[in-house]
Amino acid sequence: MKMKVFTTPDAMQAWAAEQKKAGRTIGLCPTMGALHEGHMTLMRAARKACDVVIASVFVNPTQFAPGEDYEKYPRQFEQDCEKLEKEGVDAVFHPEPAAMYPKGFGTYVTPDCNETKVLEGARRPIHFRGVATVVTKLMNITRADRAFFGQKDAQQVAVVRRFTADLNLPVEITMVPICREESGLARSSRNAYMKAEEKQAATVLSRSLRRAKAAFDAGERSAKKLVEIAQEELRKEPMARVDYVALRTFPALQEADEVLEPSLLALAVYIGKTRLIDNVILGGKA
Ligand code: PAF
Image (cartoon, rainbow, N blue to C red; front, side, top):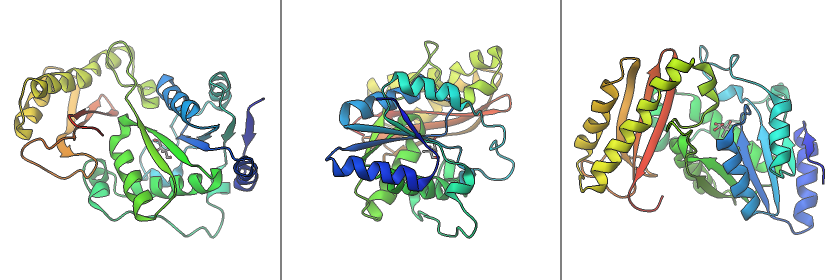
């Protein structure tokens, strides 16, 4: 079956309704496009778990604050479609912003919880309201039974789990492990902003997480010490400017002096002008 492309919520929803009527389960992989191997791991997880796979490709304006990279965010829809077709994705939803946020739009999903206030939420105050709003709309438009998100944005997964539970949305959330380049760099569409020398410097993020994880595996349970170990490694890279290194419970994202399993060791680091995030989950089952 040739991959279908829908650009309006009505057409997408009508097709999804037909799939449901035929008794098929629907897996949604929400993306902002500029697809890389990390996104393909989401598609494969969805392919395994669901009868029908829908990918959305939409650079969502409401999750970017003024001055962030909304305009500059890479857009390459044709290449994205080629990759999705190869993975056997059944349908792509690719709306214009005006189709998602038509004149008069005024209903936002605003999660008011710890998960949206810390880490990225403390730095990007409107970000998770935009994510929650668009993800809720995408789930409704695609009639998803399951939705697949990457662990690289682990806080996003925690937020999505929170608001889908709070609102009783009948969608099961699956977190797919981080996909890394051979160098250890977590795959991200924003890696395209970096020059070769910066990409090399950016490998310090995964190195610092690996060192902290090794200490955890060797028995270290002090949050402060594990954060220090990661920071020490980051300091070795002159091009790195640390925004935060934090250890929180997962998925509630509460502070804890000792590691409660599972916990999230998360960091945000500038390499040149590019802000990168990465994380590792310590212990337990996330
Ligand atoms: O993770 C992303 O790419 C975006 O935040 C998402 C989930 C597609 C919502 O716009």
